[in-house]
Image (cartoon, rainbow, N blue to C red):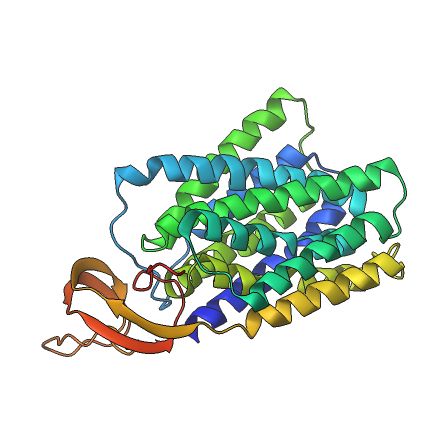
Length: 345
């Protein structure tokens, strides 16, 4: 339940940013937007941690290539494509298209990490794909720029799907350090791109808004997303995170972006995405499985059914240290977290 709550809060933090970025995209270049968003994310890593249990295992040099790839794809290319696409689709349609991130995340989690896809999730993926097609073909935009905008947002969601797949390997690391490094590298790369392509500096008000969106939608949201991945795996976290587009679409509509809101394709897309989200959220995975004996070090709690070792004095809450697991066989509802990487036929 803690993983689902973290994923929903991550979706809320990210969802509200899309229509706000769409408003600013009419005045600010896409690379400058990407730089300010991830600059805000990097700044958020300097805030006090609070009691969110976000500490993880030490950050090693072996993860540098993964961080560089996340910064390039998720922190550079994806937000720039997203900002450019929003300029031509608007906040409502652009937000709904963000549902495709869940499709790419689940498919990549299946291909790369072998996370299982049940029948309900397969139907959900088909519905969400149909929703994206409905927006492209019947969302009320018949200009080439509108279609190019849809393609750009779709490519951005693919980039973030790749980012989510890469970040699964960092779920046990300290998410604050991950956000700080990814945000800094992404912001620097896109700032250099904005300068070399001659993008103008944004007005102070626009810059502050984008920094705030970055701190909330790309900093706090990523911190919560990584915590959810730690407990639930990439596929389930991506599925719950799919509520973010509806939050963004609702806010976009409230802010006056209603040009395509009444088009048949937009309504069909919303229904398809809602149906897919419901199937994702109600999916359960349970069967008998075996845990081999293992010694490892990762963040854990003692109320999760897998960690029954004793501390003197007793310790409550999430913490990390080397510990041992005996071999055990049991049957319960589970997600593909660090303890459930077993194969499926």
